[in-house]
Length: 401
View 1 (tube, one colour):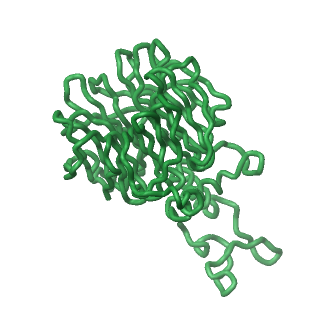
View 2 (view 1 turned 30 degrees about the horizontal axis):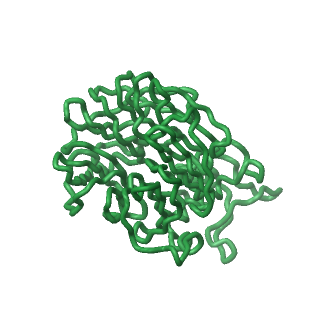
View 3 (view 1 turned 30 degrees about the vertical axis):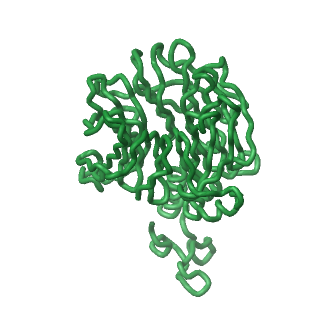
């Protein structure tokens, strides 16, 4: 950022304006010019704020009709720092308990809380936590509805995807941090597999429609939506959002393996050379490659995708919607990947069903196995506040700094 006093025709700092100030033009003195030198930093700040808060600009003026997105983005960033405020406001002190067992299949972080979804043997359950340690059970679904995925928005909207019998899927929605819930069936009674938020009311769901995968997109929490079929024979595994677009990973016999889309109206298929038939999971990161010794000084938006190769050799792909680079991974049977604070963390299951946690500090140049005592399945991981929080079957929530 450039100091005010380094710009043309500004006011000298004093007790009233200790940093200096811009000034108006008068008949005696020139005013501060309206140019990029004066206003560029401010515009760049708001662009970076929106990217860091993962808020998608609606391309509308800020007002009470269109919404105040700048305030929403700032609030999202503050909520990541002041978790105790969210805890005090939305958690019931009588229901908050230590961790409890269950088959936890999905975890997400947003608006200051971790949200887990899974099953208790009879029905689906969802819990929320401000720290990954203390949890409140906020929902027990209808008997037979078993949760397979969950996500939480920057405004505290929680969406859970539940399957019943592996076919009919129900979308459970809470607009108030899990205090109240509504439901609706996925159109066509098709199975849905995953959910990803773009903003407080915009999200996408992936699933199967009988011939292949589908992508369902809404901008008003499901009141209206469009559903687009993916290539025949494809089975979607994961959907994430980052950099203004959704990334969908797929398995199956179709020609699509990875698809990018802004709103489901069209899809971009990135170029890559990996021979893969099962794209498992993905995450999104904004990194400065110079940090990893690659010589570039620009911050790059990178999608990181882990896959299980048909030949049994797992790989990772990284890049964007134009091209992806392939890296061979050291473990097998990957379940999830997450990025945070310069570290890539990957979860996998060994041939003897032991949990493997692998991390890389230098963007896939070297790998390190994380010692752990987890003996059962691990399924998902979320990063926030300097720690990775994992979930799995009949395990208390594992934490890793």
